[in-house]
Length: 112
Length: 456
Image (tube, rainbow over all chains, first blue to last red; front, side, top):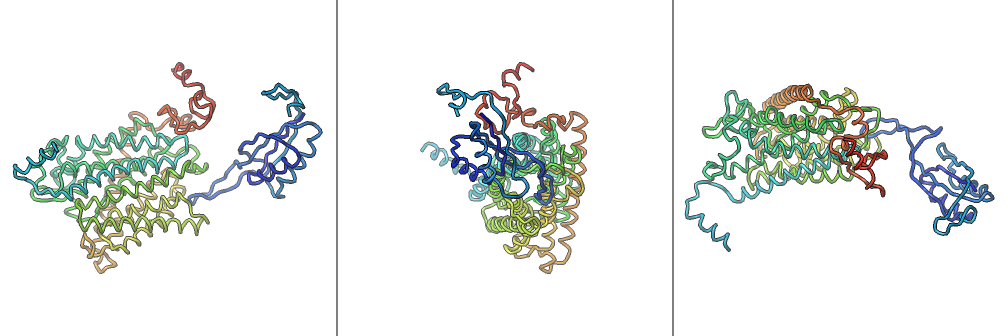
């Protein structure tokens, strides 16, 4: 079992969700986050004054998947989240020891 | 029925006064409108600060409303409208102390409105002026120190200036030097309210120093819907402020009502035009600030210009105030919510603009330079506006320094960073998390309210 975490541009979130549904992902956790990467922040002008904005708003989505689905899901995220411009985000995959479905008590792959 | 029978008894005693019920009714309503400007300003200012200091911002306005109302009735009104003690500088501070002298109808003389109502109406002007000052020191002032400052300021700064500019001599009553000797035109408070609040705010901003991160962090408004609602309430209240200053339900009030509407509208357009050309966006903060700028400029001039003159006055104020709010970055003073850029600059534009745009066809009956009146009135306006600026700036600065020395005016750096609301008022404005009940509200996973209590 793997945890896939993707940090993407907010306006691509709906595209990514649809793409994940089409490869069989049935659930996910989504949060609004802010941060920066190589893109760094940007400058903004407000009320006539210019500011450096360090943090850029992003969407973070987390999906718990079976090992064999990882490649298809990561590819689907990349295809749907990409604009080709700086700041498209990142996807990373981490191993999981155990998963539990609270209602039924199902464990591991059965709980995904 | 009972009450009307009681009222029927009144005519048995000959009415000793010339009270006019229409005028009195309008001034009662106008006074309530001016009071509404206080919560309006609290929303306007409260929305403009960051979410960690919105309650403190609103409390500075509500605190001003509470303390100034009382200080004004006890002594302030007498200093402003008591018989002059000489040179037109201050009124007799004991003459109407406590206002009980104005309880009887006999005290009204030949006034068409009750003097005690006039006193309260004027007191609410002082309230809004004091509350305006607090915008210059957002996020960082100790509440108790603010309350002490604004009480002293009422008596030493506002009341004397109100005496100079609003207290007209009549009969054996001698008033202030600007109204009677210099003959400055200031219908509703471009000097006493706008220039005074701006100059006092500038002085306090310098006394308290810059907020941590000023000029580096954006410090954008946390809730612009509050700002726009507040601006709308201010505009609504401003009709009481300006048209109420006619002290009657009459033609002057109607003209002033019209110019007040138009200047606010033109101010919003002027500011938005600058933003659109300079920054590429017409912002909601710009619309709110712009309409207030226009209203500030029309405050002294509302009875002196034509409707078209009001549009020019408002638009000019909107444009110049939009440019002026950038000055604090150039000169490095942290006038947090632009009291200087909007109220001082707008007040100066309105006060000086009378010298240019006044028309004798308007209620004050004086021609400015553009209407062939020469530079006479412009000179009076420059002198009056300049004197008020210098006096308010210097004396407010001194009071601020004394309060700072005596009790400390600024909160700790740590508290300023974590947010003034929680440390000063033990509250936060917004608690939107599902786990709210278990939080102290600091937003950084603080302990429960109970455990904080024990720590003390």
